[in-house]
Image 1 (tube, each protein chain N blue to C red):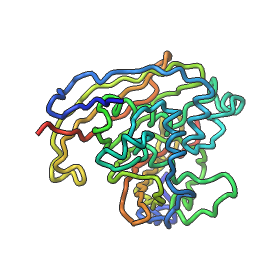
Image 2: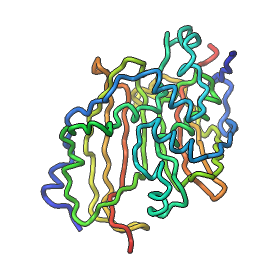
Image 3: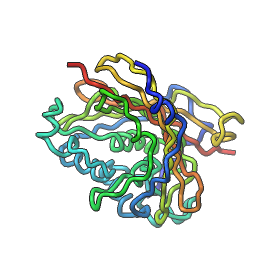
Image 4: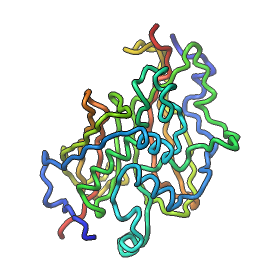
Length: 164
Length: 150
């Protein structure tokens, strides 16, 4: 099945900025490292980090997505996102299939991040092993409070109707 | 604590970068989900996970990426910079599973002019694989910039 005119018109559109609820913080970094059992001293050892080329603690680059995750309460008002406007009738289950992260600049405690999501492509309905659905690729570009790009994420998800 | 340094000059394609195994308890899986602000109940509610056809709560995506990325910097030491991570989920890792992460160097090169922000950097690409006792869980191709001796 081909895409509707309305859904096709959303391809290439960009979202409004999606802001992190909080500044990057040492306590969030430490919680993350605790759960990953990550001993990298740049993330948690003040003394080591101060004498490194960074001059202070940096966040694990792989926390890029974490900072902008929405809070549970009070539930945020979401900015306009083209992905959320897609109708795609008959499919309602999601699975992430592929993710690429690029890390351009260090993220530091005190930084306040936001991202802009671009809807890159939406496939026609395709039959897969787990059901029929659309492959949707988006690019999230992450910036800090100085509008410097710190990283980028290209993600493909399958929105599908599971096999009976 | 003294830190290891891996120089780009000393790396060879194919070389092993080590491994570790983690016992993935429900506490670690739910803790990893909250530490990455992932509130999906499939990561902390066993009844919900079982209704979704899982045998127990499952490790979330950002937690998995964190565990795989850690192997790269455990190997390189803090002088190594993670520049890119291509990440794929192939299976599941549930509470009670043992996750084993291992990897090797698959490419060594200097970033070309057509590679944007990687241009001029001394790079290696690592293949990092994660398996449980039941089979593949996830894998990543991680690009690291390393220091040189000169």
